[in-house]
Amino acid sequence: MGQQHPPIGRAAALLGQARRVVIFTGAGMSAESGVPTFRDALTGLWRQFDAQTLATPEAFRADPALVWGWYEWRRHLVSRAEPHAGHRAVSAIQSRVPHAVLVTQNVDDLHERAGAVDPLHLHGSLFAPRCSACARPASVPDDGTTEAGPTGGRVPPPGCVRCSAPVRPGVVWFGEELPRAALAAAVEAVSSCDLLVTVGTSGLVYPAAELPHAAARLGATVIQVNPEETPVDAVAEVNLRGPAARVLPALVEATWGDTGRR
Ligand code: BJW
Ligand code: ZN
Image (cartoon, rainbow, N blue to C red; front, side, top):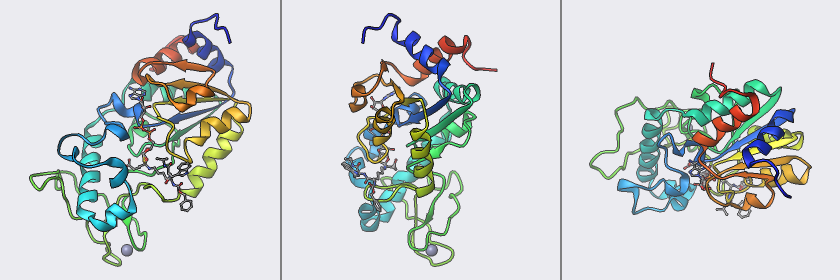
């Protein structure tokens, strides 16, 4: 369709009219906070590994210290990171739109730290370890004790206090089921939204990647924020090609006349 307005103006008009919004975020949302995207996560001493292979139950069973060390390294990285203006813009949208549900694939806590309301974490959290055998929640190790060191980043996981099996990260690995309540709430929000804003996801990992397509199929409008093309381009009414920390505050400002900072 011919766009009379620049894309940001068209997106602002859609957001300003929307009554039920879903904001759907992926790893690109946190990139400008210094958290590498999933496909860029293997830097430094992790360069020799493959993320898609490490993020599996098979990898954890084969080498628990390797996989636990990788997640501890990432947990420390996230603990030192700060939310950026894009995270705050997401919270501003939640405070302006009567029904705005945040669905994230991210395992960090940057949305929470920027004031987001009840984010639905489809792929779990770096901060919710549990027993790999009996699923008992385990405490997050004390900060500073498991910094990846000269051992090449390997850190043996603690044992469960109930059954002594290895504690595992509370994230969803390939081949594992997504948390049912979060997925059901996300599907429900997508089914009843009139606008879905997708931010910083490659749209490659299912079933989460289905959500923008489901929204479009059910008649909602889709806005995408991503510097790169993705499979979501096909269903997005507006593509805002740029980084989340710049585009989202600009979108909030174009919609409501300020950046949402109070
Ligand atoms: C910026 C930016 C900036 C950069 N601003 N943007 C159907 C078809 C094919 C395969 C499957 C299918 N259904 C299921 C599968 C298998 C599999 C799958 O999808 N595989 C694909 C690889 C093909 N899915 C699963 O296995 C899922 N489970 C499942 O289906 O279970 C079935 C089952 C049912 C019942 C019982 C038992 C089983 C589970 C998927 C779990 C995914 N987990 C991970 C790891 C989490 C822990 C960890 O982080 O280590 O989640 S994988 C990884 O991908 C992570 C992410 O959340 C997820 C999505 O990645 P995301 O967020 O899109 O990041 P990137 O890096 O891919 O992209 C970043 C984007 O940001 C890029 O587009 C950049 O351009 C952009 N960007 N800078 C804005 N500044
Ligand atoms: Zn246990």
